[in-house]
Length: 223
Image (tube, rainbow, N blue to C red; front, side):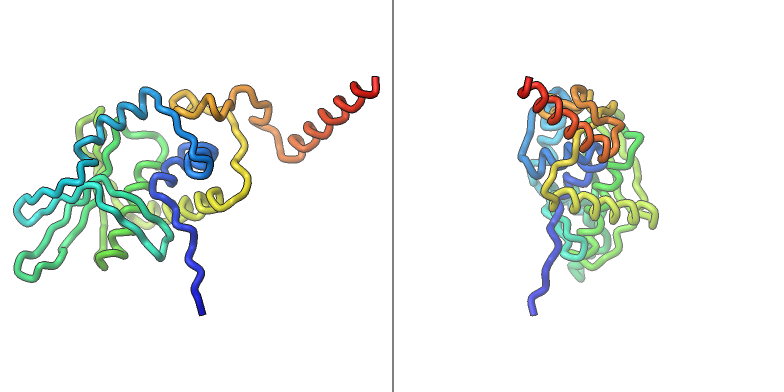
């Protein structure tokens, strides 16, 4: 009997989903992408991290651009940096710590924390070890922030994985709505949230509005 595996969600999609579900769908379903100041700065900032070069520092091995995945959670992607500590005699891994690099500064939402926690879930499955914490390095602050992978963050990460999968396996891209995040989004011109009147409308109101517009058009034709 064959086992149906879940749709594998890209790790980047988790952050995109928490930032904006519509942005997540536009990028990962409709392959929309535009550069702006923030995305360009991010590319430059990640050049060294994305090199893929491995660096040894005593018992610690710094792995860059490490491909990670989890069958259990149905996620996959690339971890910016994973710091692995080995036991030389046995050759086994003692600990693995994901480090996610961000060009800006800490955010009020938990998108960055969810992304690095999802990397930890992959590492735990791949290497059979517990990953209790990781780090977020922000370019604007030039410092690391420790992220504890406690039950609360793991629960949030599991929910985001589920919700993002529902969006990416759906047939309809989420409708646009305007928020303060739109100012920094490179897809704002493709999304056009500011010209939509559906910001606070219920689904019934949206359907009624379309129906009324259709009736108006028919009446105009009869005249």
